[in-house]
Amino acid sequence: MLFEKKYLRLQDIKRNWGITQEDLYYAIENGLLRASIWLPLRWMEIGKYKETRFQYERHEHVEGFVSLRQQDCHTIFSQGCTQLRIFRSIDEHENILRLAYEPPQPDIAVRINDLIILKEHKEHFESKFDIKELQNIKKGNEDHPQFEASNDYRHVILDEHEFHFGDVQARIVSQLHDAALSRNPWVHGKTLIAGTNSRSSRMRDIFKKKEIWNHLIVSNQRGSYRLNLPLYYEDNEHVHVAK
Image (cartoon, rainbow, N blue to C red; front, side, top):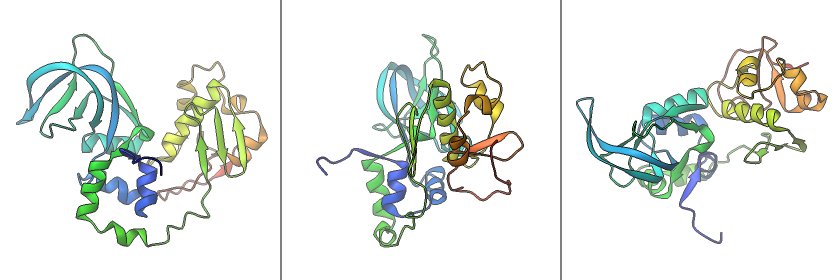
């Protein structure tokens, strides 16, 4: 490697440690491992919670890495994304950062793919748990489909199949990928389409090519869809190739 990384994505952590996705999520949700995101430049109120009340200390511009609260990570892992206004400070561990209401600012949209683990938090976890033992275990990912996507999801590869999408299609695949990494991989077609501003009302009108249904997207025949990736969490849905 040409340089040392300051952070790793969740999928990199899971692969490097040789642990299951459920174990990784459990560690984050229970405060054993801190997950962070990059916060764009925003006006923030900085303070502490005492007896469930926020005690304001100062008001300043903030840009950079911030950590997420455990309960917010649980929501992201369950739903694939959420809207947040409250974060934890990286440098001042007792401090809470809250989006200021003046000037008015929208909530920060956080997707599961936005989460990273900072090097210092990774090393702190490794000092407490015997990760080296896990690294010697065969990970067993060789037979799993390999999914790759560009940042805008216009270019997607699933094993040997390559797909190129327009804006509306890419937004749907993006939503499905967030769901695939969550505890609920199924998303209703109306929900998917509502997030695209598409004039179409049916998934089959948006994705007309047969190979997409054969290789990339599957349906439960009750209006919900997911990516054709291994389910991380067992469910009782009966899967069909979408028509």
